[in-house]
Image 1 (cartoon, rainbow, N blue to C red):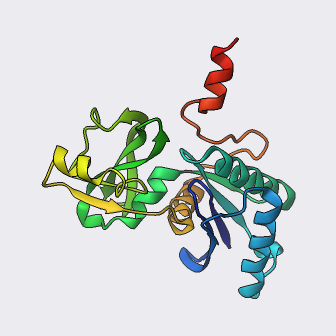
Image 2: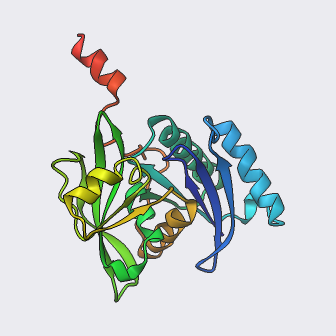
Length: 223
């Protein structure tokens, strides 16, 4: 039984996967748990509602970013602690790659975007692999302003509605998908990483921040 943890956005969710399929999912709400102890309680509720206990978990997958600095820290700390205490495998999932799992495979190629603040977005191109039947990243996560963003035939992410007029004006023919990060996508990627043996170390795993927070940059600049 794999536990998938998604806390990269304003709202979060957790999900259980069994035999490669979603067994149960639970939303953490728009204000989501902002500390690891709250996430422990939510996971306990999810397991009890499924008639399970923490001892039934055999692996954990966590969204590591890019995303909310606070949310990512909470999710990663929780997942690392759980994996270490239970002695189970831990897999780290790129948040934008996980988000792509909500896009129909027929789209084939898509640019995923999320909020990087300061009128910028985190972006990652993903390609549907018809042989492996999964969304795979093309290149690395980048930070771009919307004017310099060069999307492929479709754009998706939690900030699409906010920037829809500009995105539509850049390329009127492209498809736009407004999406909210979900633990089901984290689980889909996590299962495949687990099967491929791509595991993370609970002692050393860190969130994928891509760049320092605004507060950290200000502190660095004031030295």
